[in-house]
Image (tube, rainbow, N blue to C red; front, side):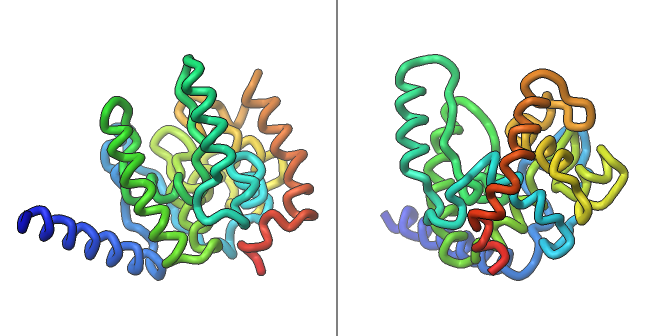
Length: 221
């Protein structure tokens, strides 16, 4: 019991300490980056240098309730649970906050480790929602998310696909990058076809709605 108590104490202390630290400094590297055999290409940019179209595209594609939930979208989680219980391929209901927690502090992985990760993901999501603000969550998400093979963050992605900064993305470019985020190693961004192209165009069309309805207001107010 004494060893268990010490383990829990140090886990809480270190996880809280890292979360507070990352409130002010960029995470230098993630587990996903370290195990990526394709190398690491990244270029951290403050949110002020990332086009608002990219923020809106991420919200439109990944988490329409980003500004109103506390880190967890219970409706999406319930729907995902129902789909998974019915059989077929497992699908999640993760918010941008949950994905940020996973990308920064944890690992990807499948099998039994996925369930361990999900439990830890709840803890780290709770921490970032209480120790960071929504703007910081979005800023870190857009800088650590995998945007292509060996490519991390939207700045590195924009440079790779269009040879330009993420500070000047069109709605189509932002939409297509957001469409590839769930599977960046298999979905083409620059010359998409089929589902990725259609989904990217749908996201691009939703960007205006995100802005006019203030779904990104917590990032900019």
